[in-house]
Amino acid sequence: QREADLENAAQPACTSDGHRVEVVANIGGLSDAEKGMDKGAEGVGLLRSEFLFLQREDAPGEAEQADAYMSIARAVGHSRPLVIRTLDVGGDKPLAYLPMPAEENPFLGVRGVRLSLAQPDIMKSQLRAILRAAPYAKLCIMFPMIATLDELRECKAMVEEERKALNVPPVQVGIMIEVPSAAIMAEQFAREVDFFSIGTNDLTQYVLAMDRNHPGVGRQADALNPAVLQLMASTVQAAHRHGKWVGVCGGLASDPLAVPVLVGMGVDELSVSVPSIPEIKALVRKFSKTECEALAAEVLTLSTASEVRARLTQAIKE
Ligand code: PEP
Ligand code: MG
Image (cartoon, rainbow, N blue to C red; front, side, top):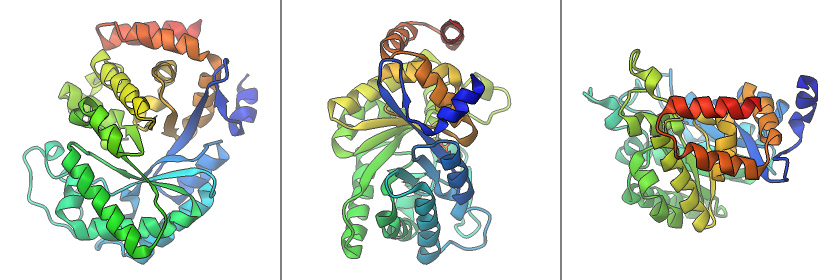
């Protein structure tokens, strides 16, 4: 069975009743992109662009970034999606060349897109670099930590300004759904984006008010908590009402137990860690969409993460 799964790795993942779910890779640079394609990724659902910015003395220039995005685009291939997330750093991931005042609550402070909007020069040069790579892939731009419509509109205006200046065709623009307000307002956001990608790592930490890295509390921050699942389900429904696609790029997408629930909720794309690609594809094939829908509806009525895990463990064994 394992060998058959690996052989099938290059094939698309369809449920037993023929519903296709795109399985793509989370990557942190070129070598992950190459490995991901070897493992059967159908594209990249999350390029964490931090790899270009962290652990160095000065900010990467536009040309250096454009080169990096272009080589990744070439490795992914021009017919496959490549979702590039703009810089996602802040109080919790400081940059040497961008001194920031110490914050008491860095996860609630100037982080992700908030930093990019506060320091628009960095964001503008990154957007130009990404747009210059656009002809080499089905390129999508994604903004992290969006909490308000105002932030999204500011980001989109910046994309439009740089796009027109560079005279490149429109690219898809989407947001991470990882702050509870974005999930709650998904209906309004869906009107103004091309796609959503649910970041279950941060969404879980913010919904449960549990620091994802806390040595004691972090372990309880389970993305299969029904509170998180309910927000995810309503987010997917809102996106689909507006004809927009939804991915999941947080760690939950790489958790085998979660696959049937995510498929049942209607998630269109699972962006997973490179080593998990063959296993996640195999799990999509194991169930029918109808079974997944029934299972998702059932677990959404449960009360605790451990009840959800117990029910899903049973479903996977059956
Ligand atoms: C997430 O928050 O789920 C996510 C994918 O982003 P990161 O883990 O990079 O914060
Ligand atoms: Mg995140």
